[in-house]
Length: 217
Image (tube, rainbow, N blue to C red; front, side, top):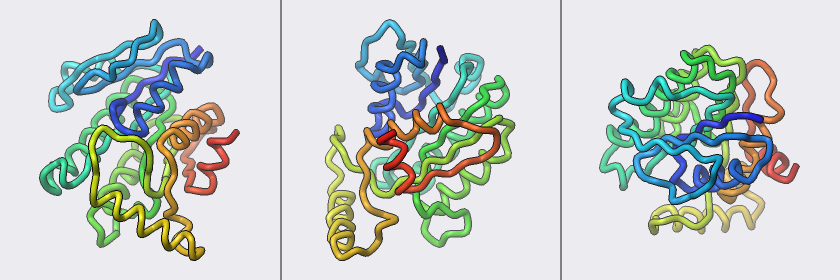
């Protein structure tokens, strides 16, 4: 009976992940750290409303068997690259560092296909830098989940993202860009849980085809 920690629980993947964790008998407790309530109700759920800029208020609470990290925002919603980097990289890294200090053994991160710290693309470089930095933390197991574009019901309408999804699906129909074909948020969530249940010491990365297989297992 495990205790799961979650950040990003109000996002597309994180919300589905939290729901699935609450329904999974493998987990006795699900501890969520968020800026606003998930709206979920369960005797297994422990919800902490926090300010990520004040780690002294929450870092001692980051204790459990696994940290699932699904925090993220868009460039438009954040208002600029600096603000997006703060959410997608800095907040996640600070939380992972707190978990490592508190001896949480397993870390599962939602990254991205194509993440590369040397990329010329800001988003891919940011994701790659986070992967590189968390690998230096003292977890027994680090699992990198690297999906292509995510689809599913969101609370806001992302016009640019929807257009990009349509373009990728067009190329997928021609047999191109399969590495970047869309995957549903609930499938990524299932893959995250399965990757934890199969965790082995060291660093493991799961890309798109592997994520579909994990989600079905």
